[in-house]
Image 1 (cartoon, rainbow, N blue to C red):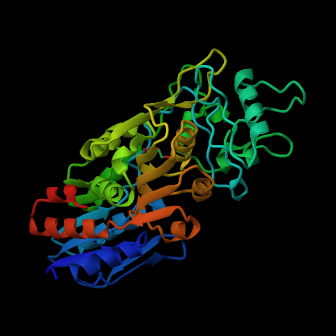
Image 2: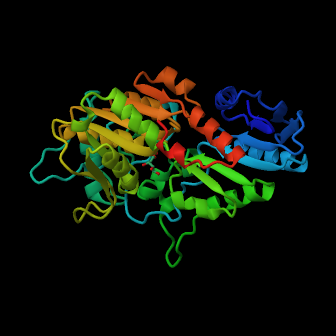
Image 3: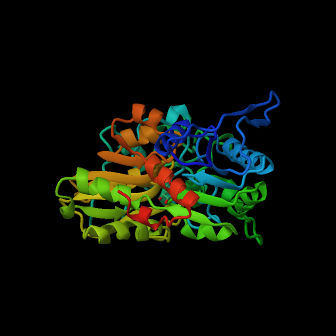
Length: 435
Ligand SMILES: O=P(O)(O)OC[C@H]1O[C@@H](O)[C@H](O)[C@@H]1O
């Protein structure tokens, strides 16, 4: 039992608050956190925080914007309630991953959350990974070869082209059959009516909305700085988070940020759950995550391979689509994909398909933050991934119910210990070896 600590939970991850309190041997702070009928947040702190060291647990998932504003209000409420210090404990930090500029070359397929899109994934990039003399992918057994053909024709035909036989606008999305309506048109004629993912930035050909206007370089709001400022202005003295997509994001703050690592837990899983793991290959599904993945490969003395998202033109007419290319030999090996985040799960499911096509015997995906937005769980279920392991940096109960391939590693002890150490002014670097 630690003294003078108050742990206050937001609404984003009640299980995490409960676990952390159990580890620390203290009850969670009593509070009301709800909404007024007009939609504004209502926050009342029912226990005294005067002179206390307060830790507010709120993760960046679900209703992210509501949770973010609730976090700001809770921080402010504690500060004005005379708390000595307020630390925001944010296992998955919101708005720390957005691209600062839309890609101006073509890329991955659109992803979306429509109910109608929950089957018939091909996991193909269009065109497929080029291999000298290599065969084209045959797609999954759920049969979308015709679509694959049609889409590759569309890629070659170029922007605005129409199919010779029907004259319909060509379909643009490549990974679900249901993206093509019965009239042959994409089901999302209006970009404003559907969810947006970072893949939309990559694939500007899907929607005219991403075509830059002549003479104007499109400006993308960089909310990361604003969010850092909001938390600091609200009164946060300290941030504890885990596996920031971009570790440099810590520099957006002028208060201390402790960025804990998921690596020791993931590493421990490999050592204890994957038979003959030293014969397996660690794979990064994109160049951005290579450092994270090689760190694990180096620690465990394992081989490493990289999937490179090729966004440059690979032939004259294929100027609009990204392919994934494997760098490294994984034939007849178990592959372990390592990434910080699965959001739409587009990246890892496409990577898994590529790995199986290149001869992988089994594919694991080890991910710190399993956001699984939209139809991601269905996508994972239908994919070539054999086992997917995530931490509970965001709630995983529902995902686990829907996905038999999913295993969850509990990070509450890491956060509880980080809180205890920060409270006592002890070093937290030992947690970087935690397993
Ligand atoms: O493909 P989804 O799951 O949407 O997004 C996850 C990917 O996007 C990147 O920022 C992450 O590092 C990860 O590679």
